[in-house]
Image (tube, rainbow, N blue to C red; front, side):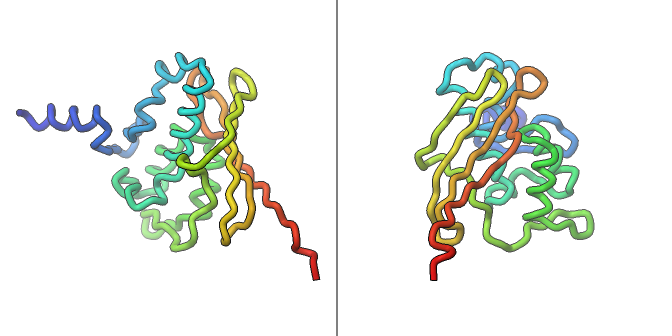
Length: 178
């Protein structure tokens, strides 16, 4: 069996992650589902919630050990990846917080990861309009304390959903107690 057929089968099943710098389509299992033609056809709440969860998972993927399989090296590579799933300003802010560029290569800063959406935990999904949605999740871990993370999404270019903004609301009860 020719190698190209095997690679195509692996890519179609989501077992192969590939990225070509400058390529505007990123091939992760979630992003494959988000091609314009497919995303525009999703109208039910559950389908939109799946898109929101998949985008949140894709956004944080470069910080995970398996994120190396994306082949991202330069800042341009990372920005090309993020332009498919998020607002460019949000991507830039994220990169500046968790990566440093050395000799043209982005290196992960060894630090605690941000408090982020965990698709295995309960969450609250809201469709705000035909072009906006949000997903919220409450966490209470020692490092961050009780915090609600809300990820906001918007439709870009008519059919494609992206992460537009991220908000953290921390409950700070007891800070002024003596």
